[in-house]
Length: 243
Image (cartoon, rainbow, N blue to C red; front, side, top):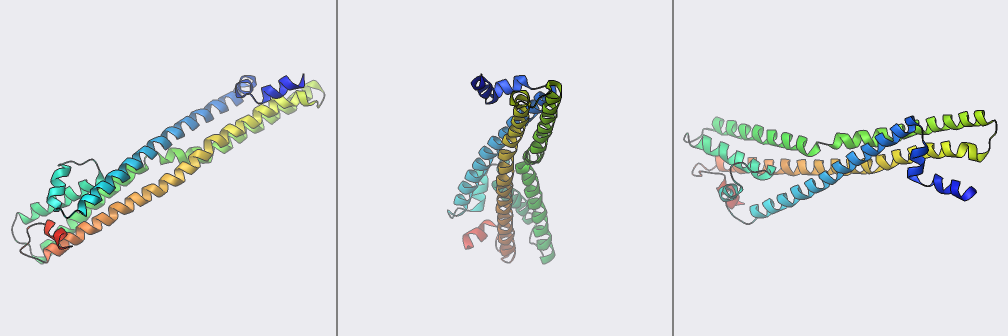
C-alpha cells in the first residue's frame, strides 16, 4: 500500500487534483506566469537575434565604401531598423539645412544640435521598444517564489489540521498536504528561475544594443562636423569617403 502513495506524490496531476482551492489557485497562477514569461523570453530571443543580424548587415554596408546617400536610399524613407533610420534622419536634416545655402558657424552648430536631438529621440524610443516586456520577467522572477511559499505555508497549515483531526502523526496523514505544499514551491521556482535568467540576459542585450546606437550616432555627428569644416562639401557622404 505504500507504493501507490509514493507514486501519487510524484504525479503533478494527482497533486493538483488533491490540493484545495487555495493551492490550486496558486498553482494555476504560477503556471500562467510561467507561460507568460516563456512567451516573453522566446519573443525577446527572436527579436534580439534579428536586430543584431540586421545591424551587422547594415554596418557591413557602411564599411563597404559606398556613400551614405546610396545606403540611405537603399534603406528607404522609413526603415524599420533603428540604424538606417538614424542615417536617413541625419541626411534629411543635412539636406534640408544645406538647401538654404552656405552655413555660418552658428548655423552649423545648430544643425549638429538638431541632428543630435533627432538621434537621441530615435535611441530613446528604440530603447523603450527593446526593453518592452522585461518588466514581466522582473515581476515573475521576484514574485513567484513568494507566491509559491504562500502555497507551502498554506499546505503545511492543512497538514497540521489533518494531524489534529486524525489525532495521530502518521506519515500517511500529513504527507499529501505537505506534498501539495512543496509542489506549489516547486512551481514557483520553475517560473522564477527562467524569468530571472531571461531578465538579466535581455537587460544586458538591450544595454549593448543601445550602446551600439549611441556609437553610430556619435559617428554620424562626427561626419557632419567634418563636412561642416569643408565648405565645398554638399553632404556628409563625402565624410564617409574621407574615412
